[in-house]
Length: 111
Image (cartoon, rainbow, N blue to C red; front, top):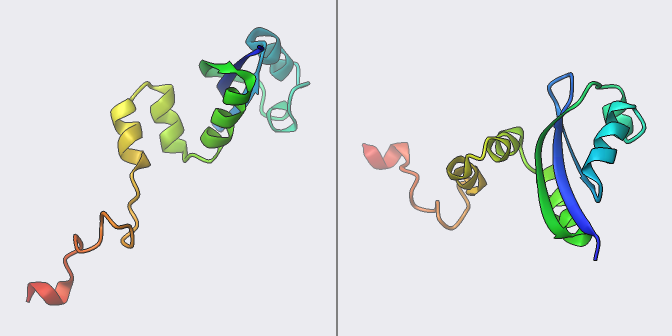
C-alpha cells in the first residue's frame, strides 16, 4: 500500500494549487523547479501551506478532487484549521434547499 498525501500550495500570485503525491518533499521541489505543473510553473515560488496524509493514494486522490471544488474561503478555513468556519461554509445556502424553505420572510408577509 502506497501512502498518499494531499496538499495545498500558495502561489506567488496568491492563488492556491491543490495536489496529491506519495513523496511530498520531492513533489515540492518539482513545483519549485517548474517541473510539476503548468499552473504552478508560471506562479513560482510556491509555498506549502497545508498537507495531510490520506492513507492510501486513492483516498488522497478523492480528497484532492473534493478540495479542488471548494471555494477560496473553504480552502483558507482548512489551511487555518478553522473547522467551525469550514463546517459553516459547507452548509447549503440556496433558498430552495429543504432546510431553508419557509425560513425566508417575504416582504409582503411583513405588512
